[in-house]
Every structure is written in C-alpha cells, then in structure tokens.
Image (spheres, rainbow, N blue to C red):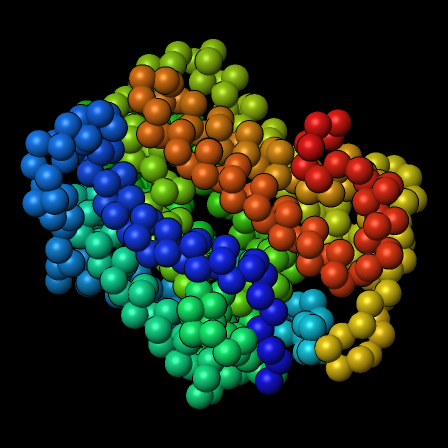
Amino acid sequence: MAETKIVHSPLVTYSSMLSLLTFCPPFVILLWYTMVHADGSISQTWLYLREHGLQGFVNIWPKPTLVACKIIFCYGAFEAVLHLLLPGKRVEGPISPTGNRPVYKANGMQAYFVTLITYLGLWWSDIFNPAIVYDHLGEIYSTLIFGSFIFCILLYIKGHVAPSSSDSGSCGNFIIDFYWGMELYPRIGKNFDIKVFTNCRFGMMSWAVLALTYCIKQYELDGKVADSMLVNTILMVVYVTKFFWWEAGYWNTMDIAHDRAGFYICWGCLVWVPSVYTSPGMYLVNHPVHLGIQLSLYILVAGILCIFINYDCDRQRQEFRRTNGKCLVWGKPPSKILASYSTTSGETKTSLLLTSGWWGLSRHFHYVPEILAAFFWTVPALFNHFLPYFYVIFLTVLLVDRAKRDDDRCRSKYGKYWKTYCDKVRYRIIPGIY
C-alpha cells in the first residue's frame, strides 16, 4: 500500500479538521435558520442566540426525522442506480502515483437529465411536491450532517481492511487518515466509484435539484417566480449542466485524481455543497427581488459568459492532453513544456504543460470566471444582507488554497520543469496581480 502524503503540516491538518468538525456543522444549521426563519439577517439570529444562549441554539437545530431519511435515501438510491445502470462511454482517468489508471463509465449527463426530468415530472403529475424538500430542509441538513460523519467512519475502516487499489495507505496518524482519507479511488465492487457518487452524483446533482426546488417553492408561495429567482436558478442550472457535460474532465482534477476520499472532501460534497452552494437560492425564496428585464438580462449574459469561459479553459487543456499537444490553441500551435517525473515505483513518465491560451494568462486562470459566475448568480439578491454572499467568499478562499496546494504538488512532482513553467506563466490566478 502507498503511504499517505500529508498535504499540509500536521498543525494545519489538526486545526482545519477541528474547525470543520466544530464550525461547519453548526454553521450549516445557522445558515439554514437565518435564511428561512430569520429574514436572512445575521443580526436577528445573533440577537436570538444572545437572548436564549445555548438552549436557543439547541432549539434551532432540527432533529433528524423519518421524512428526511426517506427523502435522502430515495434520492441517493436513485442516483446510485443511475450511476450503475445507465450506459456510458468508457473513460480512463490519469495515471495514479502508483501507476494505476482508473476506468470510469461516463454517464453523468444521462443521469443528470433523467434526474431533472423525473423530479419535474413527479411535480407536474402531482406525485411528489418538491416544496416538501424545502419544508423539511433543516431536518435534511441535520440528517446529512450525522449520516455523512458515519459514512466517513465507514470509509476509514474500508481503507484499512478492504482497500480497492494500491493507491491507499496510512500515514500512521488516525486524525490525518480520517480527515484526508485512506483511499484515492475507493470502490464498491468493480463499477461503483464512491468518489464519483459523493462528489458528482450526490453533491453536484443536489445543487441543480435544490435550485429547482427553491424556484418551485417560491412559485407556490407567491403564485409567480421573481426575475431574480429565475436568473439565479438559470445560472446555477447552466453551471451544473456544464459540470456534467464536462464530468470526464473533472475526473482529472485535484478532487478526484489527487485528494483522497476522507472527511475533508466527502463530508463537504455530501453536506456543504447541498447547503452552502445553494444558499443564494435559499435566500431568494422568501426575498423576491424585482430586477427588471434589462438588469436581469445583463446579469444573465455576464453569468453565462463566465460559465462558458470556465468551461473553455477546461476544454482547452483537456483537448491539449487528449491530442498530446497536437492541436490548435486560439488558432495557433500551443506553447508547451515537456516535463518528466517519477512514479512511486520508480518508473519515469512524461507530461506536457500548456503555457498558452487561457493557461498562458495564469496557472489557474479558470478560477477567475468560476468565482465571477458565483457572484452573478448571487447578485440578484442585491445587497440588503451579507449572508447570501458567503458562498462567493468561501469559494474564493477554497480556490486560492486549492491553487496553492496544486502548485505545491506540481513543484514536488516536476521539480526543475515546474520552475521553468512558473517562470513562463508567472501568475497563479489573476493575471498581473496574483
């Protein structure tokens, strides 16, 4: 088994895990409560907690319920069945540090459309009302918080007793193993990829499902959907649609190809994505804003443009890798660096580093349009309250940290070739600034 490589120092790992365990679960509940029951006002929630103390927080936290368990189970089981049964093209992932190459079935787009059509069809035919999901949202988040923790414990045990490949192992520290994960590619059987399920089919799929849920709930409350909610929903659904269109490319990113399946990534995808990532829409349910046609179109076009640029960045690099550099980038032969590296088994391999097109502007330029897209689907809420913008701030911090971790990993992997690359592409994220 491969030894776990500590991504951050033990001090950073301990402090980040402690903050995740102590801050993130109650924050999810406080976020939901503030958006749904406190008019989106942080000060109103703060006054309530100051007046009622710890008991007030206990009163806020909904208990897991049978209804919430049924909703989560039905949704999760449906996505698992689609993941296993829908047809899809065979796709190979990148070679792992131990020389393994994971194989996937690319059926995410099919699963996405089947999910949304089924969900809207159940609503249209009066079989299931999505507003029920919104009405039990607090209970669902509470159930996910505890259920996902148990799930991560089972992942930790599996990594010890039944790892799926040689891309697994322990660093000898329980906290680090549990937090960062034991396995890079955990699977149940041959075909059920756990990280694809948690990250893509549960987490990202829930983003689109909840965006539609908030839209439907506002329609039920007001008899119409505000233009602000329409802009928010359209942009989030377009973004998630882009994700599943590009899902095979996602399997080459840090989330799948480098971060192991531990509490950090799995709890985040199972709990943080459905709650924090969807929060601007959650706020708009009870706070409809009339933007007017002109402003709505400006925001919509700007948001879609950012999503397209984000997609085109990833498409450009994916095409460059697929053709081994034998393609055109912005109408010209690509500028590139041939870099060699060694696997943990001592085998020498080569990679091509793209230094032109979007990837010549900065090493992680694709994060710029991603952050801007998040701003554009949040800005329909305007600026009466700060909390709807928490996701934009969180995403910025997350991507800055991810860019640093990716740079550190590449520096360790490619050595002098990475220094040459950084000399040629000087900026990490924002061209000319950072």
